Amino acid sequence: MSGKQSTAGRLYGVGLGPGDPSLMTVRAVEVIAEADVIAYHSARHGRSIARSIAARHIRADHIEERLVYPVTTETTDHPGGYQGAIDEFYAEASARLAAHLDAGRTVAVLAEGDPLFYGSYMHMHKRLADRYDTEVIPGVTSVSAAAARLGTPLAEGEEVLTILPGTLPEEELTARLASTDAAVVMKLGRTFTKVRGALEGSGRLGDARYVERATMAGERLAQLADVDAESVPYFSVAVLPSQAGAERPESRERGEVVVVGTGPAGPLWLTPETRGALAAADDLVGYTTYLDRVPRRPGQVRHGSDNRVESERAEFALDLARRGRRVAVVSGGDPGVFAMATAVLEAASQEEYADVPVRVLPGVTAANAAAARAGAPLGHDYATISLSDRLKPWEVIAERLHAAASADLVLALYNPGSRSRTWQVGKARELLLEHRAPDTPVVVARDVGGTGERVRIVRLADLDPVEVDMRTILLVGSSQTRAVRRGDGEEIVWTPRRYPEA
Image 1 (cartoon, rainbow, N blue to C red):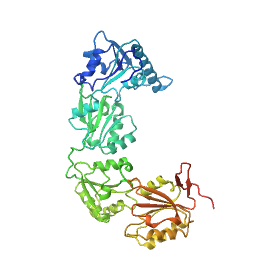
Image 2: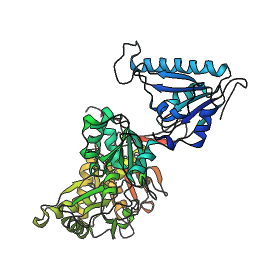
Image 3: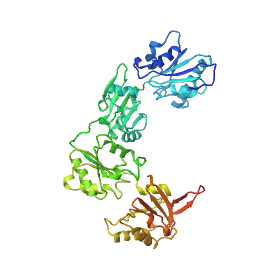
């Protein structure tokens, strides 16, 4: 409630609910009865859904203000285009209402659904609420009405409900639909074909329901995949309901394995595509530490294991998929960088798994995350090398370090040390100092994105192996890499994109 003029009338934004007059609130009916002026929006044809919902409460002595849009979906010759025509209309409409308010009249602006939820009233509210006493009467939204008519929960427990306008670009819709648990897409009509494409692209089309004119005459409910685009009006929504109560089939004719990366830490590092794959999976397979980063969903089965059984884990996931299960194999970082994608694809190359579909989805790598925290040390050519000699001899590692260092490449060193591998960092430092100056910047990044994050910049000569463990990645600069302390005291590292000519 707000206001500036004590002698002026009062402004009400009145939510009428989704269409059925019996779903109007008691307060909405009271406000209409008290009002001197009843205002409502309409297209140029003059019909107003809002007025039709409230018709039984509108009296002959009410002053009616019909706010007729100059343009809806058609073109306009306004010099400011569509937006210019609409802005001019809102300014003129709010001025008309202000004249009534200045005369001491109470004005009720009718709004379908809720006044501040994708409604026309909000444009009057933004122009008038700071000048006049104002009250907004909430109403039942079309979202709630659609769920009620479908008889299905929208969201349950810790599920995330996303509400989207169908006017978004298709790629944006696809990404958001892939990354959420449940969703409602508003403003269908001309956007229906695009929304259907986004649902299909995100793998959610089979779950999507269609609701047209919920609670109103002509209501229609259907599977969205079965709806003819030519028949879809503006007052319809697409609904992806809660998955918590959905039964996950014991088997399908065809399962699949999706290998995903969770990034270096928690949910902030997940891509929308990965979120969608994790939500859709029947089974999650992975190292327990990485599985703990994934939200729990009812009906999903988790298969956690030690970090040293990659081949067994891959074959287990493929066996589940052969039985018709949708399986997500979970890695940290990017699954294709020293992670599970290689193990899964190697196993999938065996004849017995030849018919099992396998997809690999990218993730944020530890090197990219650490580089972003430090500045831009990977701004030029760089090489990525694992210092772990568990799967390859140290002689091979040393040879590659020599080659990359002599080529003056920035180095991203993975798996530099652990409780059982304590000497490799010191040996690598000695080797690199044969090719690099002692003051070469080194980014020492531990647990990037996690609660124990620590990112430091040290000289190569001062790199202390004691500070390095299995949760650390090292970024070693080239001869061109610069470390600069800025005015705020923060030190940043960057490698120029231009390399000096010989």
